[in-house]
Structures are given as C-alpha cells and as structure tokens.
Length: 259
Image 1 (cartoon, helix red, strand yellow):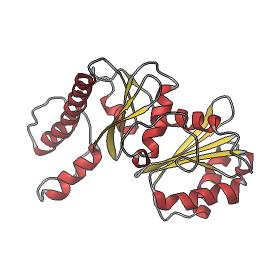
Image 2: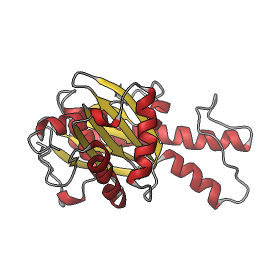
Image 3: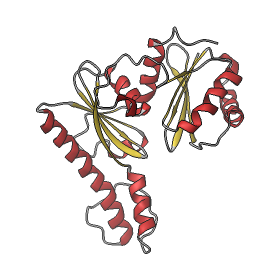
Image 4: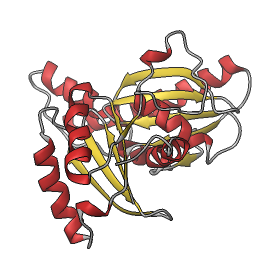
C-alpha cells in the first residue's frame, strides 16, 4: 500500500494506492509548521473512516514545494508508517531529461506533472496546472521537461485586487453570465475569470506558434476545473495528473524504498 503526498503552497494532498487503484484521497491546508505528530493525528482519523490504519503502508512518496515542511513529512513516514519515504528531488530517478538552463530550479510539482502527463498522453504536451501559481509546462514526445511559463494564480490575483484597492471587496471566483459587469462584483468576477481565459488561450497560442507545431493541452489542478468547457484551448482536464506522476516515480524507484 502506497501513501502519496503532494504538497503545494496552498493545499497538501494525501492519496492511498492499493497496488491496483487509488482508493482514498484527502486534502489539508498547507502549514509549513505542522508537525509529524499533527499530521499523524489528522491522517489516522481519516484512514479510520475509510477502514484503514497507519500500519497498512509499505511505501511512501513525497513531493513538496515547501522545503521547510519536508522534514516533518519525512518524520511522519518514518515514525508512524515505519517506512523510509522517497522524496522527489532527493536522489530519486525521475526517468526523464530536464532540458532547462538550471535543472535544479525545476519545481518538484512541475516535474511530477510532466511524468504524469507523459505516461498517459502521447506526443508533445502543454501541461497547465492552476493553483497558487498557474504554470504552463512543455513536455517533449520523449517525456523531457523543456521549461514553461509561470503566472500568478487566479485566487492570488483576486486577493491582490482586493488588498490593493480599498473599495474593492473580496469576491468569489465564478463564471459570470456576461462579460460586461453592471456592478462592482460582476465587473471584478468578469475581469478575473475571462481575463484568465484570455491568458490561457493567449499563452497556448504563443507557445504553439513558437514551437511551430500543434501540442496537446492537458489541464490539472483544482482551479483548472473552472475553465473546463469554457475554452477550446484545453484538450483534456485531468485531475489525477499529479498522483499518476507520483505513482510512476515510485514504480521507477521501488528498489530505493523500504522500511
């Protein structure tokens, strides 16, 4: 049984794979100071609700973009799962070339997504991950990671608009019925929502033009579901892209995992 942990700046995903399929997934808000003991209490309760317990795991893989949290997540695996975890970025073989100027700067989440996309979809890909940041990453036909684009995430942009303008309220992000808003809330929702649709479509077009050929566009991340069906620029929405990548990395490095 595998516990896969994918930690972003906003949320941390815990997913359980039984060797055949993913049988449970839970999310928690990311807090860099959360201890291994706190994680264990929270996780054990959710496992119990699913008829599982901490002792069922024989493997763990961790991907985190929050370096100060890795110590506590590793201790969670060692102390409560009694398993030495694989940590993406720490002597783990990804099995793909990283073709950027400084490979060490590539975020673990972006590399995991590239692998998750490559094992599922053929050809060259653009992988869009909408979270705290919105990233557009290029995956070559051989699985190589070839760089990309990083833009502020939609929630970050909405929060910045509220914080910087004294008279603009904090509003929910949703698709407005019309582009031109007739009140402040509607105008803000339209500007952010359709502004991001235009951002996505514009960057896809520019990437394809720069590459000189068509690429399949895969979107993932919780926020990406907002744009599914709204723009023709996205070919597929795949919510399991990241955990598929983690599972593949674990398979490629199973010889390194152990108690």
